[in-house]
Length: 277
Image (cartoon, rainbow, N blue to C red):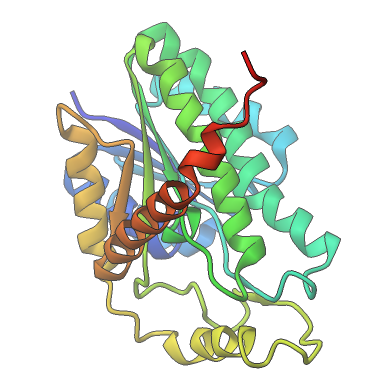
């Protein structure tokens, strides 16, 4: 039986690549976007498979009705893909409360609202999958992406617990951690840059330049990434985490080695912190 997908941020980047891959597999897709008209041509090419839905995931009050409407019309949602997101560059000190809250609204509170809305339907059917589009920044961080990585770390932490909570209901959770892929991530008007205060030119400055210089030149192919995501969902043993891209795999493995090294170096003293018997 073909699947019913609900994909946020569906008009571009990874979202659109996943939509196109699901359509090619013969599935039905509801593509949610703030500007659903960007999907008009794709809807026209697949009128029986794809519908575009106007939805800003940060408007969490609108999420339950949107999900219930999709279930009422299609009977179910088999796969939720929480993909809507954007880049943010700025030093920790440079990032304002407003910028930080806006990022968490988009990367954490919006996806959380969607998960809460779809889970009762998935639990009732005892099947389904939740795909959380994170980033290699959900495990690693570097100067200039403290806010972005913080929001992705939060999403991943919640999703790890979620996976254990819903496994008994036949629901899969897949955390996708891409590296640099050729999407609109750093395009003008999409990424947000905090005001440059000056002191962090030697560290954050490199990240600011990287964002501007890498746009349209990233090595990763979103279509190939989407194919791997679909394969992982179809696998008997779907992984919890799926780094994508040479850079992401290397960064995550190096990070794990670094964590192990830190823990091992202080293991004896760290263990010896209980009250004396």
